[in-house]
Amino acid sequence: MRSFSFMLGLALLLLVSMAAIFADFIAPDGYDNIIIEHRLREPSFVDPTSPYLLGADQFGRDLFSRIIHGSRIAMQVGLIAIAIQTVIGVTLGLLSGYFGGKLDSVIMFITDLTWSIPPMILALAIVAAIGPGLMNVVISIAIISWAQFARIVRSKTQSIKNMPFVEAARAIGESHFSIIVRYILPNLLSPILVVATLALPTAILSTSALSFMGLGAHPPLPDWGRMLSDGIAFMRQSPLLAIAPGVALVITVLGFNLAGEGLRELLDPKMKL
Image 1 (cartoon, rainbow, N blue to C red):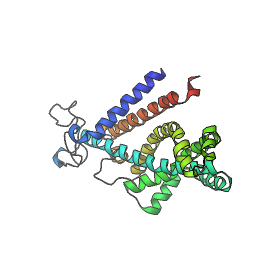
Image 2 (cartoon, one colour; image 1 turned 60 degrees about the vertical axis):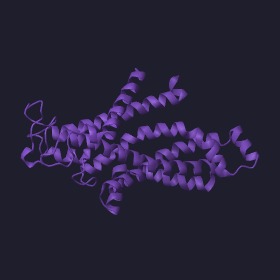
Image 3 (cartoon, rainbow, N blue to C red; image 1 turned 180 degrees about the horizontal axis):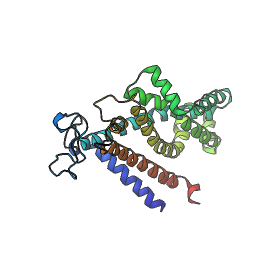
């Protein structure tokens, strides 16, 4: 069953990744091409004369094309957010776990403080301070989410830094930087990869939630959160305008969660017991 979940997650991730990479070839139309005469046109499986697989939105844009192009935005913002929070969290976790002492106390105080504040409230405060926009939302998500990386990396670093091979490196006079980069960091790659895989769907969901509130991507960018927000107003005339981006989000998040759990079981020997 675990193997099936892992393979299902990989299959869903492959589907979303292929859509993001080959969006220009898969989508039959541009995400911002407007044909106002076709506004709220029914999907082709309801109306065989309709040229739109999932119908058209309130501006006559092809919904299927916008969903496909939206996968590119979702993957981009997720990967950028994860990259930023990984760099921050891993760097602080390594410094805290390796050097300990007062530095450890200061870093852990900041980490616990960040961890204790409700994420969405903190994200809203940051976006309010730096202004709305897709990249600002990505930065705010990264700022509120690095703590989990720091805590895990700190714990692993504390257990590795006293191992014989690290003591041997100290004995031959290697610098702290060399020991961290050559001996400690490579042994942390597995847990970092697992945490990043599990944190990525949260970053995508958080970005979509802020876009849903109107703080993220600006029209005509096909952000799924913004599309879901706009589509709610037309639920009676064209329910797919809200359902389609919601389903796309579910598929993406489910794929990352299943793949992340499978990866954790694969890389963590304790999960196999």
